[in-house]
Length: 403
Image 1 (cartoon, rainbow, N blue to C red):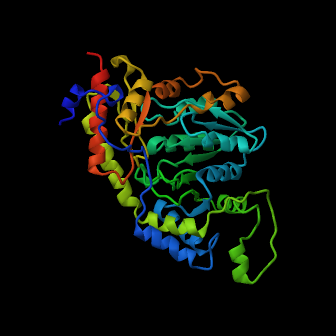
Image 2: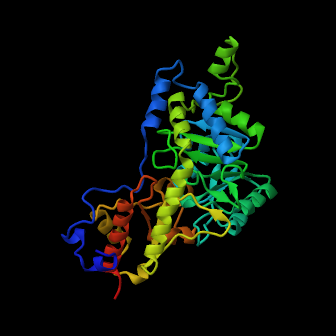
Image 3: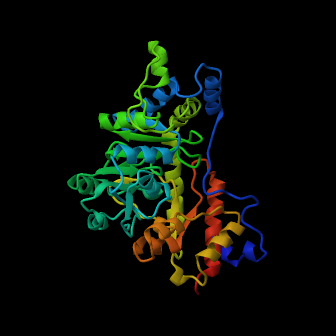
């Protein structure tokens, strides 16, 4: 049955047969026997926690993204916290942050006792709008934290110029964007610090894990100490040197990544290129086949190559007979595991109560949120999986489109 004829089928939410028998998630990991062997090898070795695999993974990762240094962390959130600390954020300071992100991007500012200031996003990419950032920068601004939403790099050149002019650090939250390029440069080699996540739904997984890349040796050293209780040396270094003495030189945390996780990361990193290629193939199919439907498709600027962590569409609600909640429920009933990314951070109850946040602060982000639905996007999706998503979207939107 063709996509166009599916609008004649009864929807699953109304008692019809679903497009799929089982739920297709919006994202998931993909592990093979090589990944398993890499982890088992470490389990049989002398090092389980911060050992030789950590350094190997960091060096390989830095090489892959074109950065001088890469410092691993136990999660993407821990990596964001490390970057906020290394940027020098503290009480009385501010950081300009995007509202359209997972709350960890802004929370890392709060961890340091600083204040997040939300700037609105550009209507096309839903990344930080440099003009809005310029309006929010103040003498207290110590960092600008941009998110590469859905895997599309932010306006890094303009944001770097704004941050540098203000004497601030640009932190790029690239947790969606490993493998992306901006002006032919790999993401991870451009901003003062770039943060990555290795959560299972990302392009490369270590189970949980994160990384900060930088070209600044001072920042890299601060990051290493911060993730290790603020201690100036690591256990493996002391072991190899036959030394016992160490000094705590700053207040840090136990944010270390394990050798077990880094062995998996090394194995996964070798598949990054093909993973990104597959995601781009899926995005291309979606873009071609959804043209003409009452949805706004993701924009791609001329100077970037996205990594497609997500494929978010914005519903043209004016052309539909129901709202986002009904479309979401109908697609879920077809066993298409759609999701929504994200509730604007300033509208979460905690932020409303602490900072008296109200709707209207970031109108572009807020309007986008009311329309957004993320379709399944992960590199192990089969052609049949992609067909099912396409069929379900046509089926549901065809049913609810205004005639």
